Amino acid sequence: MLSISELIRSSANVKGFSSEDTFGRKKFGEIYLYNKKVKVKPKSSIIEVSMMIKGATQKIKTRGGEQTVTAHKVMVAINNVEQENYTPAELVAMIRKENSNYKDTEKFTNEDILEIVNSTIWSSSKASKSGQILQDRTIFQGEKGNYIVIKNKIPDSSKIQVWCSCSSYYWVFQYYNILADANIKNPGRPIKMETYKYKTKKGLELAKKGKPMRNPKKSPGLCKHLMLLLAMLLDSRVVSPVSKSSQTLETQYFVNIDKFKFSSRLNQESYDKLIRDFDKDRRKVIAQRKSYSSWTDLAGSQRTNRFFNKSILESMR
Image (cartoon, rainbow, N blue to C red; front, side, top):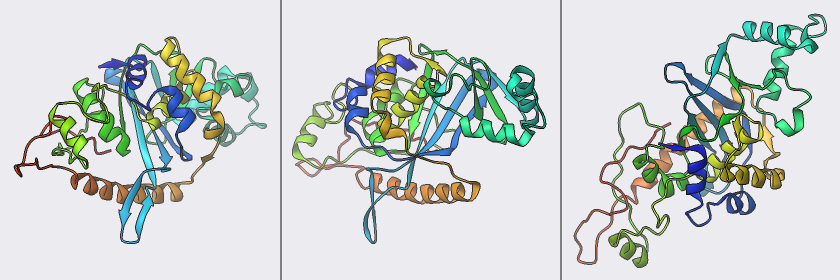
């Protein structure tokens, strides 16, 4: 398993996936604020952070022609994290106790405080230091209406596993992340992914030599959506940018911050529709990936591509 800083640094081994290239040149969709959530695994001290991002560049084929996918789901699981779990009532009581600004029950009802919490989750540390609700801690939405409080400044030396639904992650990094134990494991049934069909003669020849075109150094790494999620965690000081690679990622995020000012705060109905559309697109994406699942050599016989193993787990999240 790799650390946060190691995975950021490893990504730069692949052309176009350095922090500078990712944030300076690539296009991003809106961030859906409803789903910036945390799944807590207290027995192993793991937090699993997930976020939905609107599709911007990935296309799928439909009967009406090509269209952009609805959204991508992006996830990181960070190990050895101090965490506390609260019901809404318990969180409000703690905030009133620790923050004098919210002690007045007439000025701030319980509902008022929860609304403030929900509107400021993951807000930039640079923009809201004076308005921080809990000192040196960040509040996340949990999975079942609860709230998770994380102590800030998680070391970027912490071990991490990642996953993204986008095809860039799937084709470029997922296989090597699995080998490095840096891919979030699918708790369900393993999905067989056969070998990749190269569209060009050059791609086929490089595959036979064990030198894949997309990731010739066979490096574990991060797609642009995962880099954005980590950059947001760094910027909010949930993760401490100690290493040079983490500092560069945060700097490039902030230099290009105008790209990430667009966000949508969804209600429950809108979020449910987003998930339905995402699941529908996801099935199409998986089916189209399978259409590139094998290749035939010049003699016409079926062979195994050295780039991918015959059976590989795909995280169906």
